[in-house]
Structures are given as structure tokens and as C-alpha cells.
Length: 536
Image (cartoon, rainbow, N blue to C red; front, side, top):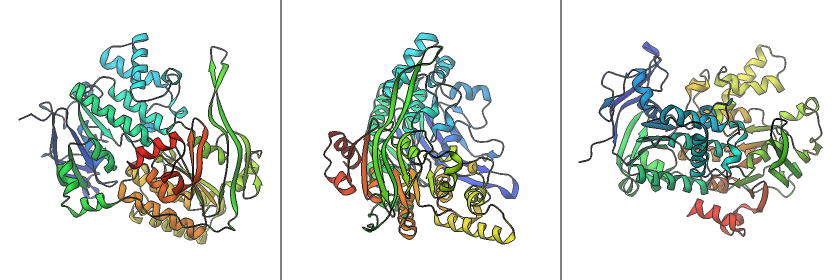
């Protein structure tokens, strides 16, 4: 019998002290053999990521703690309460981790090459040209196009999917014995998801690498996992081989997860619905500069002459691979990114307006960002974050009566997105990734805007909550006649939300039309590839 490379027994994780102590994980036990993939699945807040962070002892100790019975053994070495020197020799070397939110894991002050090279220098001793060649090789391995041109890019200059690929490249740099992947395909489009999963499979085979996969995507679990552990409220409620779990789920929670998937269709829009947003020949070009004098030698054409319109109560889905220009298009449409071209919002040309003159329109146009942690202030509670827009735009002068109205609206929005009112005074770091995304949606909804750009609004959410959020967005859209620009790589969610779809590649629109037509009968070869990867 093969001896496990990792054994987790009776893992308990507590946060806080005394009477305020909360149990995040209770009695979790599982093991991973060499070259085996074990998946931890469950809803946001179920304890999946906390369990993974416990392995590397990355929790915020001493506010986090383990019980005396908790045991985590890696290659015969007890990791619980290990000294810093021991853990430093394991972290990033023998055990690597891909974090859920790449923007918070990558250093915003350092270029991509430096960040990957640091890992190579620390554990492999590679420096200079050797390290540079290895960086390029790793970035090619994870499917980043033209890696040579991206080495000197900063994290904010990359799309969410590109940042995730950089994270994976850094994690694989030293060929670890165990790779912990916390939602590794969350920010990736469907075609690259398949590539990354194939890559992880190949590395497992080549290196004998074990993989602990944390995900809410059951499609990913089906494709790659050998064993599945289902977590709910900090406990593992069911554990068996992947084939057996999907063929015969026993626990009610497991059956609920497997049966959950965004479905349905958006409410048809009226022929008389007014145009909320009109965009004509929109261009966003980023200069490529070289040398000491920063001479411009070319441009990255993130958005290259795109035109579209969105009516009241309508959802326009924008799909395409990471780096195709989807997010940049959304930012430019809201005047959050410098651009050229015509932008008309509710009959008002806004492309030439200065910030002062643009301000009155800001309350009517909102955005939900892809990375909720990066867009939420760590110094503000959930209630303060959601209510900030009200205080800026709707209640510039407040008294007791206005405060009551503000708090009532905040509580209404908290309940609308499925969060508990008892959490209203908690801070972003106290929530899971999925819960933070719901806070972002509530913040956007609180002003009841005319237009919302939704940039991957369900990417951090588990499958069961995705369906709830889609239904919530559809309900709010129908109630308030909201216009949505819906940017996503998840084509199943796009199908459930969108009236029309535009398909982007390299800053251009490859195909556009009615949503169902694009999905069931795509014409462009690129669109056919996307649909095959998503629905086959």
C-alpha cells in the first residue's frame, strides 16, 4: 500500500479567543498519495481554503489556532506548530500554493520576471539569463501568449486570467511534491481551463506531483480529481472516489451541489426600451515602450474600434479568452479607462467630459470588479462599504433620519445578495472570496443605477450560489430595468443572463448576435472552439 504524502487528521481551526471563538473547520480528515489529485469542494465559507492554508501554516496566528488533536503530516514531518525555519524550507519548494486571488498574491511594485525569478533564486539558485530563460519557459507552459513581451509587465497591466497564469507559473517553478491549487481556473476562460487542467495532469505524471484542488467548479473536479471530499460548515460530509461520488451522491448537501447549475433565460425586453449606452468606434491602445527614452515602438490594441448599444432591461454578454479586451472594454465604456471614440450615456455624450462634469453620471453607472478583495477597502466594514455610495451621491448631508434611511437601504441590499445581517460590521478579510463578491454586488446595487458593468461577477462563487446570484441579477434587472454589460468567461452563466452576445479576440469583435443563436449555432471558428470547450 502506497504511503500518503500528506495526512490531515482531526483538523480543527478556530478564529478569535474566549467567548468570541469561532470554529471554521471541525474534525476534517483526509490524505493524499503521491501523484494523486484530491478535490475539496463546497460552498463559499465551508472551510476549504482555511484547511488548505492550515497545511502551510499560513493562517493569521495567534488569532487563528488549532486544537491539540489536530495533525498535519507531510512526508513524516508534523507541520502543525512547526518552527519558521522548517516551514520556509517547505513553502514554495516542496509544497507550492496557487491562491484564489492573484492580484493580492502578486507584488504590485515588481514586474512579472522579478517575481518568478525570486522563487527560482531562493530555492533553485538560478539567476541572470538562466532565470530569464526559465521564466519564459514557465510562462509558455501555462499558455501566456508572447511571454517575452510580458516579462516587464506589472500585475495591474495584465488581465485577471493572465495574472492567474503567472501565479501558476511561479508555483510550478521548483517542481513541488505537492501543489495546493485554490480555485486555479477561476479567472481563466474555458479554452485555457482545459489547457491548464491538461498541464496539471501532465506535470503530475511527469513529476509524480500530488495535487490538492480546492474548487467550486464540479466540471473541473470531474475532469481531474481522483478523490473528492465535500465540505459543509467546516466539516467533511462525504468523501469517496470521483466516479462513485457523481454516480451515487449520498449526502443531501452533495446532491444539492451536483444538481446546481445556472439555468433559465433573461426576461424579454420591450421594443420601446430606451438606449442606456451607445458606444461607437471605441479604441484603447497601450503603447509599447523601449529604451531609456521610453520610445514607443508599437501598441497593444486592447480594444480596436468596437461599437455596440445596450437598452434598458437588456444584458449584453461579452465573451472571449483572457486578454481579449473584455474588461478593458467595460472600463472604457464607464470612462474608467482612457479611450478614443464616442460614448453616449442616456442621450448624453460623455467621452469628452472632464471628471467634474462626469461626476453627476457616476451614480447611474456602476461596476462589479473581477477581484473583490482588491476593490474593497480593508479599513471599512461591510455596511460602510455598501453605504459609501449613498453618502457620496444621495446623502451629502446626513442627520438622524437620513442615517436611518441609509441603514435600511444597506440592510435591504445585504439581504438581497444572500448575506447575513449579523455580518454587517465585519471587515473584508473576515469573509470568503465568494462572500466578498456578494458585497461588491450589493455595493453596486445600492444606488439603483441605470447601467452596471459586471466583470466576472460569479467567478469567485460556488455553483449553488452562482444560480442564486444569476436569479438575483435577473430579478433586479426586471424590477429596476437595469442595463448590464456582462463580462465573463463562464459561458453557462452568460447563457442564463444575456439577451445578446459579442465575442472578442485580440481587441476585435469576431461575432455578435442573439445569445441563443451564438451559443447553439456559432459561425466563426474561434466562437465554435469556445462553445465546444464550455458545453462539451
